[in-house]
Length: 353
Image (cartoon, rainbow, N blue to C red):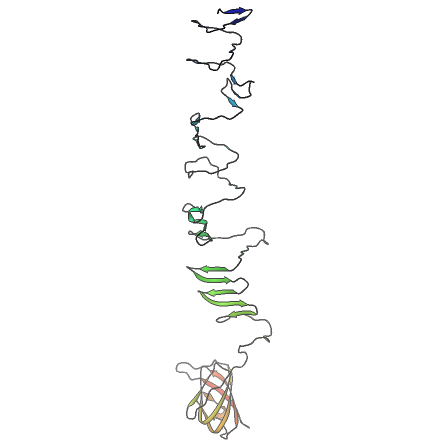
């Protein structure tokens, strides 16, 4: 069929072959065309529209933008320039700068090649989740000096520091406290595992010295193991029990023919004398006063060591009769030392009956 010309339109009803260029100033319309086959470059001056209406399905503009309003499926990698590659399994590879307002999902790699990362705070809106054991720890410091982790095998948590001191500091207001809570006990240990402070739930608080318990609280007070030294005490002590206060009395046993020695760490002595008895002393401090009460048990003869100095240089005559009581009072005038004898200034009151 021949080419039909009607007005400004030219219609080719069948295949047409042109051996020279064809210039069309208006619109070239393809009716029922399914394929455009070109062995050369196809140039669209105003873009390419795909779909019944322009901009509905897909369009490629003359400035290189591609707009798709539906799903675009690509079987292989998608490359954007030389810096971005998107793989079919969803991975993204970037060699340039990635700018984002948020990140989500998992990341891989150690980030050792990252540069230009600002040294600012990282804020996590929810939580950081890591697996159990030291493999899933939070490490702080170049050598992982500080580690925070949880052990699933014994179900406990750890904060470990292996370099320098470890500080827990509250720098808030003067009324702000540091509070440590536990559902059961709190234990503070030093060195390898020495007990230092034990806080027992619904029970005692224990203080230790070199792994040895020295103080323990109880519902009725405290128990102290060892010596309590204080610069002062308050109260009248009327409720104190089990302590020695004031004059301390010793009751040495007198054996006939054997010297009875008084330990002057005590204040008062009660001697039940029988037979022949000699009174001697040891210890003592200059200026301390003591009393000696002698009770005769049977016929008794009592003498004194040379440490005792009596008025006029003569020892008192102690009654020998059974049942009599004598009182000797003496003060340490000189404390004995090497080459220097103890001196006791003594007085007597005898024959109490």
